Length: 176
Image 1: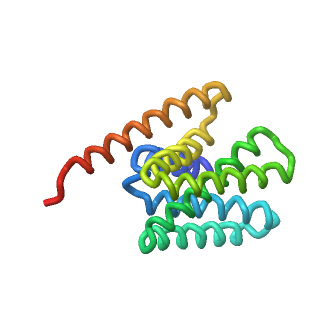
Image 2 (image 1 turned 90 degrees about the vertical axis):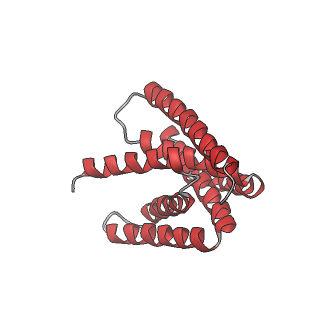
């Protein structure tokens, strides 16, 4: 499986999160843990220990998925923090900011995202899963920055609307 295959897997997972992140919250939590675990391990481990980066990412993803299944509210708060931190790291890297600014931004946005996830659970799950999904889906595409921004904005809006409408529709249907 070549690098191009991984790019399309990343785009596909991103699109699934954009459109169904609220309904598949366990996937959102697992992906958030995986991404932050991979990013942190990649920064702390030399390029020769690729298996360690994958192991850290998989472990973080598995822990996230288990948390999502057994402790839904706590998992979403943790995933909110992880998602915010990962998005901050991605944006800081794209902007070319020097260390330690990306990590300061990651901690700040992680705390804000975790608080948002705690106090506004449904909306936080919709917004954060759409945001992470957009970052995954648009990030690897070979587009100029202005087009990436336009596609990301449009995809984010569509994802939030779709998730909101499916959440409302599900809440409007009384249980049998």
